[in-house]
Length: 267
Image (cartoon, rainbow, N blue to C red; front, top):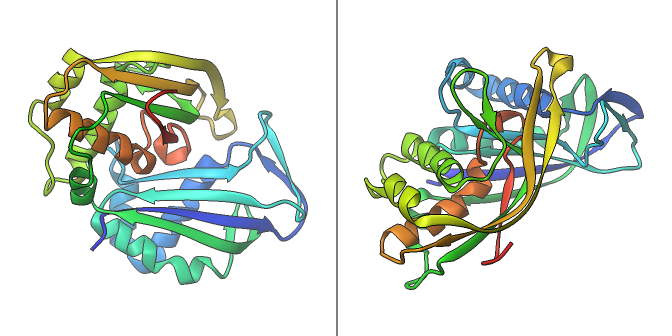
């Protein structure tokens, strides 16, 4: 059984309308409502886990404008993406595909589903498919604003290795107890991983229409360099980098922040 899934729905609105530009929370609500139709207990458990890491991510409509409003047009296609990070939730989500193909509703707007792309894997496969001699360099493109929570309401919009890979380690440890990382993985990252190069900028994301304030995150490309090639740490670092496209990074990943793609060895 697969552990992880990335599901991208390619959508077309059935009529022209104007909706809020930030649709991440609407995508989150749609996903949880969909799950409720199959398993209300799982949906409630996922939704009510206050303060806990969530076993999914959701990104709203893309492309999205930078302003407060989005003008929908039936002449344009959009995409919406969800990922699942736990075996049970992944199974439920994949069972929803026939229902989603009939169309979805977002912000009270009906969208036709043109097609759905699905990618899946397991935690064990992420660990075992790494090369015998993995590179010391790896890179990410941070596609949506990424930030890391600190105490209280403070956040850090910087791609420090301990935050980026610490976020991935936290999610992996929470959702993949059967495929554990090395006990000292976090300490190894702190001791040996550095930023090799970057091209980033900060971006403000407003959730004020939902009374959730403003988040300042960063987007752009970042390359990291490992000063130590010791196995299994370096191989597991690459496994975490592959995991990032499913898990996302940082805070508010269930409403579209922290979406990343792995790049080559350099940003």
